[in-house]
Length: 193
View 1: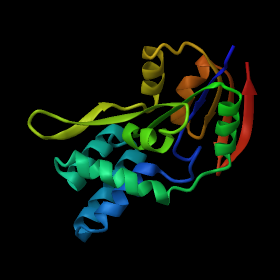
View 2: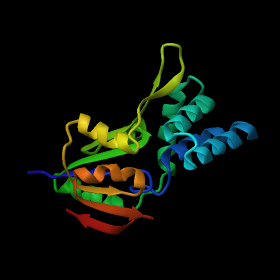
View 3: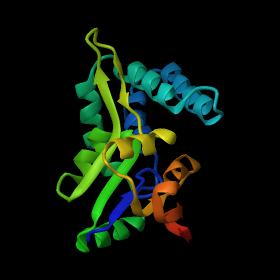
């Protein structure tokens, strides 16, 4: 029977925060005020003063207004600026072994889908949507506790192996048989039940 293998994306499969790469390419074309405000939002979410979800919603509205298509285009061009970690070899190994591979991340699902479209990888990410009044927002945000809720709503009750980098991913550990903590592209801890 095929095993279920789950990978985080940002700072696990790639070195960067992918949405920061996407947003930075656009805010560089804006005024210094926009750049400062964007990094203020990042700092506020790091300090826990606003949620990561709210930071992303404000950022996408500030940078893209109501133009979701421009955001998607920026996702496509940002792909070339992402730097893969050696953990990508593990993802490829699991594909070769015909394991079921899921990449779940708080980055844009559109970006994940575009990156992995030619591989048998299930992508679950943040779904950005435009409301009826044209306001951009988030419909799904797999971050922290929501990662587990979203996986379970997709029928996942047990994970054979997981690769992750941050404390916010540890909500998935109760579902895991084994898990690998990643730092700077290397597995630094391996755990098993």
